Amino acid sequence: MKILIFGKGYMGERCAQAWGEEATLSDVIVQTVEDALDEIRRVQPDVVFNAAGVKGKPNVDWCEDHQLETIRGNTTMPLLLADACSQAGVYMLHMGSGCIFYGDSPHPDKAWREDDFGNPKPVYSRSKWAADLALSTLPNVGVARIRMPIDWMPAPGNLIDKLSGFAKVIDAENSVTILDDMIDVFYQLLVKRASGIFHVTNPGTLRHRDLLALYKELVDPAHSCEWISNDELVSQGLVRKGRSNNFLASENLAKRGITMRPIEEALRDTMEKYAWMKRGGGCGTDCSCSC
Ligand SMILES: NC(=O)c1ccc[n+]([C@@H]2O[C@H](COP(=O)([O-])OP(=O)(O)OC[C@H]3O[C@@H](n4cnc5c(N)ncnc54)[C@H](OP(=O)(O)O)[C@@H]3O)[C@@H](O)[C@H]2O)c1
Image 1 (spheres, helix red, strand yellow):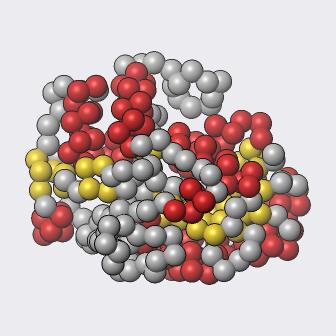
Image 2 (cartoon, helix red, strand yellow):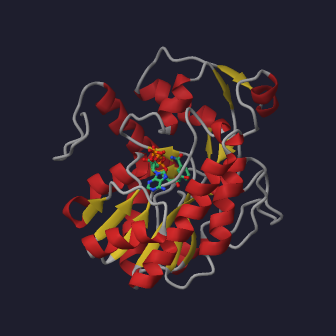
Image 3 (cartoon, rainbow, N blue to C red):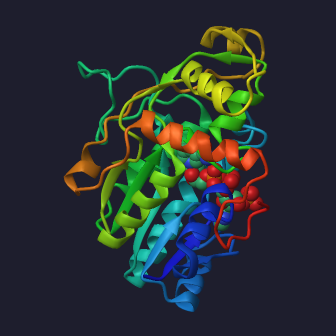
């Protein structure tokens, strides 16, 4: 399967590395339908994977003051890409975010379903939700929402690096995504040309406290932090807008016969590999990463 990947960032690079010769990681910055169409005609892919987007640097608070750049990257650009894919007759899988949901869902189990409407306030989350609303009406497009990626490879966007690097941490409980499992699920969705919305999160939920306890056990016994509340995160000026914390139910993957490992199992496996990497071990693949 020939996969054309747009978005040469954390997710695009990780997927390209895992998919090897099947993947072409594009350098093109998409600003028009023609930009995307030209690249699709050049590469002649079987499927397109959109890992391009604007998350804000150093974090999503940047998006609050850069609304148009955020909307262009997260709403306009995916629609241009979907237009090009439709014209070329190619399936597109788009990376969405579970951060369009804030708090508990109205369902008895408090978990958000794929078809539930988002309730975001921050600019980043709104721009992602706007894309989902439009893309999910298209027949040859899949939207794969992830949350708080956890990876064995140290990286600034890895939840392990983020939480272990904070002096003050909130003890939130969330649905999360283990990168290895995500990459495998994305591949299966691409093979199936699966349309609709998919919550790509591992079964179960994770408390920040449990992740850091495992970090302390396997990576750094000397690690410590101060625990604060979500409100204190904003009142102490550590972030501008409260972060999304939520549980996602993943019903549509199950309908396609796609499963992910329970979070406890996948987290321990990932943390063991992460500890190995931190001790200077390589990733064991013929990769281009700095390991
Ligand atoms: N990482 C997470 O925690 C997370 C969680 C949920 C969902 N997601 C979604 O997953 C996607 C990828 O995230 P990521 O972590 O890989 O982000 P990332 O590291 O910032 O990578 C995104 C890449 O897309 C590029 N890009 C922006 N606009 C583009 C355009 N018009 N055409 C082509 N490329 C463009 C960016 O280039 P520049 O750097 O030059 O701008 C960057 O290389 C995003 O849509 C994000 O919303 C990520």
